[in-house]
Length: 74
Image (cartoon, rainbow, N blue to C red):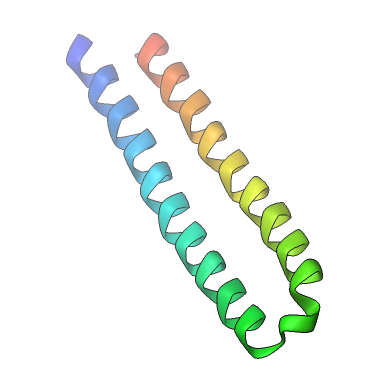
């Protein structure tokens, strides 16, 4: 049963990291397309991009916390 906690923790963080990486890639790609279309609004787009990336990364950190809790509790 000790391995069950490690497996649950690993899968939890792997899924969170995969989802986060996919979302960050899509957000960055969309921001680069928007900057290419309207270079004059690059500052506003960059600000929105960084804020969005911070929120996405926060979800990854929540996944890390959940995986640590699963590992210690199971």
